Every structure is written in C-alpha cells, then in structure tokens.
Image (tube, rainbow, N blue to C red; front, side, top):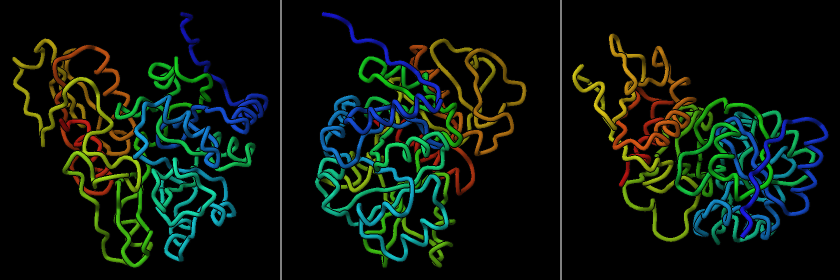
Length: 334
C-alpha cells in the first residue's frame, strides 16, 4: 500500500491564499494559523467538510467545533446573538474569545455535537483573517492535532502529528498566545459563565458585562457533563502528552536529583543555580505571557524524548495563570 504523502507547508502569498481558499470552498480541509494555536479548518456549513476534520483528528462526534468568522455581519446566519454577546464581541473581537450562543438551522448538527448552540469566534491572526475573507465562508477549526494531544503552536507541529492525514498547512509563524481561546457560555445572557479560561481573563469578561465575577465550569470528572459537550476543551483529560505529567505548586529540586535519567523538571522561570539537560523553564523571568506561549511547544519537545515523567510547576497568580493551570491540570489528568 502506498504511504500517504506528507502535508506541504505553504507560505501566505496571495497566490497560495487564493489556492487554499478554493480548496476550502470545494470541501477540503486546511491547517491554519491563529493567534491561539493552529487549527484544522473546513467549511462550517458543509457537513462533509467537517466530517473530514473529525476523521483527521480522530475526534469523537460528541465534541463540537468552534466556528470562525471574518466579520460581525456573518453572525445572524449562524446564531441568535443577544446584547451581552454583542457587547463582548465589540470589546474583544477580533481576538481569542469564543461565545456559545443558540444556533440557526444553517449550522450542521455535526458541528455542534447535535446541540442547539454553537461556539463562535472572530480570530485576530492576519493571515487567517485574509483566508476567511477570501473564502467568504465561516470556517470550523479545532486545534490541528490528534484528538486529546498537545495543541500545535507552529506549522511544524501540525506536520509532525497530522502530516499524513491532511494535505495543506498554512504557515503563519509561531502562535502569539499559545493557549486556546477563552470560552464564554451566553446561551442564557442572564447566567453567563466561563467554560474554558484563556488569555482574555474571567475578570476582563465580567468587567465588560458589568458584573463582579463570573462562574467557571468545573472539569473534575471524565467529562464536564454527560452526553454531547456544549463547547470544546471541556474534558478533564486533554492537551496531554503521552509522558505522564506531575504537577507541583513549587519544585524544590535537590541537586542530586537534577540529572535523574528519564525525568524532566519544568520551572516557570529560570531557577537560580540549576543547570543540566533535565532542567527546563518556560520564561526566563517567569512572565505569564511567555509561559503560556512556550508551554505546549516545550511539552511536545519533552514528550518526543521518551521520558518516564515530566514534573511541572503550576503558574502562580490569577488571570492568565488560571488558563495556564487549566491546561496543565488537564495534561496531567489520568
């Protein structure tokens, strides 16, 4: 049997964007850059195209997709947007915020796991926005990785994990944020809730809605709720390397253990006096944007080493630290 060809990585030239837009219009799938992580995009109004996304990722049908749009003018065809949703859209779009709203009949049931709501966002990445405009379509785009594995933040990550399952990868450089979007449930605008924390913090969302705080959905079981999920990224175990991950509030590493074979130690910032091939850090000064941006890339690199265990410090503080720790908690779940 002939082995599938490796997906090609394309640069964002006008000619390439026109070609990839045609492929999307014809029902193909294309891996695309966003400011959060790389996504695997297909026509959100074409159930056949979306089925290719599920097949390439090995994604279960009860985990819905996020639909990406280019402009607010596309909203009425996809969902019933309430005033709270429009307030957040005007404040944070384009950007890493996803809104869950009642859907219209135009959105295939496959996209929403059969639920009567749809998750929508308007991305900020300029190359993805140009592609969205060129297609004239809303594009469903979950992370471009095998289901449940560490999200990709570069085109090379996509090629390494999905390169034999897809044909087209659009290179937009390393993802700016490195964490998936914040998801806000606005199906009932009287009871908004954070379903998944992200770069846009719960405090920022609450402030925009004129509230003191918003509840956050728990993820303490195998699934956040039984049956089809209301939004992606809610499973207790997700974003996970094959190597077991152990979390620590703070790593206090005896020098004798720093070079233990088969073990990696990941600090939030460069530890004083700690050197060695097994010691890693996410940001030299522990700055949270840098920690978030490098988290998935480092986990992928360590996972490729065939280690016995990866020890990671939790992020300290609130806001963006909540999003980082959310991903770490899911990565470490068993």
